[in-house]
Amino acid sequence: MSVAGSIGFMVGMILVIVISVLAGMFIVSRMNSDKEFKTKYDERQQIVRGKGYKFAFWTMVGLLVLNIIFDASDIHLPMKNSVLYFVIILIGIMVHTVYCVFNDGYFGMNNPPKQYYIFMFFIGLLNLVIGFINSKGGRLIDDGIIDTPFINLLCGMMFVVLGICIVIKRIISKSDDESDDEEDDEQ
Image 1 (cartoon, rainbow, N blue to C red):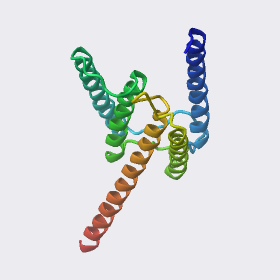
Image 2: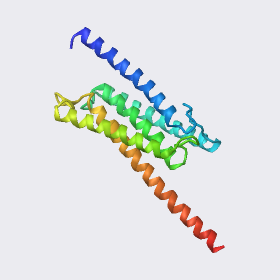
Image 3: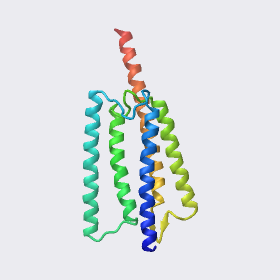
Image 4: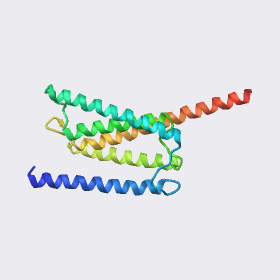
């Protein structure tokens, strides 16, 4: 790729990221029950989210240190650096998200969960479809190295894992509620 092509690609990626963030902010503000962008959490949820951020941070630090060790040992993973760093970011996001989901710190007080389920399902499905289209075109792997179009599959899989975690948590919560109701009836 020429220098002009590389610069064009970088500018395009930056524009996609900026537009995606702005669109995401707009969508989130419309999905919240009070039409505010900021999600409201109670004190317990804020503590849970803080712990989730701490675990995600240290997970990412550990993965980056592991990457440095691989690099110093001349061990090369079969993926481009952009994909590798994105994988590290996604793992950090998943650590935070899964911790928050299972400790009731994911959905805020002004988040209608049903709308978020639909939104997450749509975004996950869209990324999986784009990933599968890229796989049909043979763009996921270039010269035996995982290339950037693979990121769509990773994002789609992240949303699938998030959805599974939310469903498991809902089943656990319903089971706990039913056992609490049975205990109340016995007394």
